[in-house]
Length: 274
Image 1 (cartoon, rainbow, N blue to C red):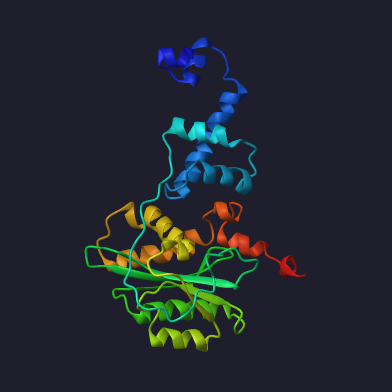
Image 2 (image 1 turned 90 degrees about the horizontal axis):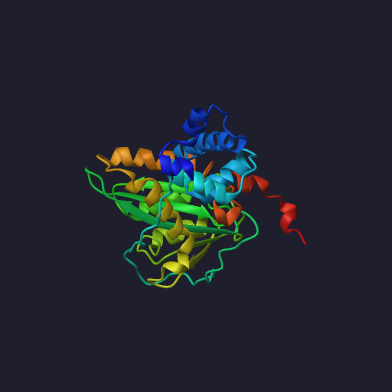
């Protein structure tokens, strides 16, 4: 209270008194320094829940969440917050809905999700198609192009299949009714890979909510972070964000505050054995 009234820092107050700072104040200083670094490493995206997770799970610090909230507030640090969703051109479904909004699965490569996002640059729009494993939230395939065509989604699918090599008819690939996903070419590639196609309801973002959440995160943490001059600049940034930040490091509350790569590493086949 005295520090606030006198408008001096806590450390300055104790220096004036000629006394050492209490251990708690020294601890707050140490924590604030680490918190600033975590926040910076997250590209300014982490709020107190993920900063707290990084402190406790990642660094082994013993600190409660309210203390982290207070120290972040005093340091002027905050996370980013989500905006409204997107829209896309749709077509008649070519697959039934095998998911029915049941996104919780017990193992990797049981359910994949896919969707397309777009963002403007000074040189025109950039389109990104991604394939995500619902178990770990890991992006296992992606494709970036200046055009929103069938090749965009086929290339993302090809990357996912090459990386994961799923068993025939053991993996569901869920999408919306976008014209790229209802195309004959995409359907054939789907069947050739032994995947089971699934499509949600027209115009209902909740039917692919996990992908909507992923795009929302990318929008906040990357796409809206600056004005992009060229398509190449943004394409390189998307690649770096997915492969060097999101997959290996970004913590998710839905998977125990682990990153997608870490969470997959914790999986053991015996976890789902009967």
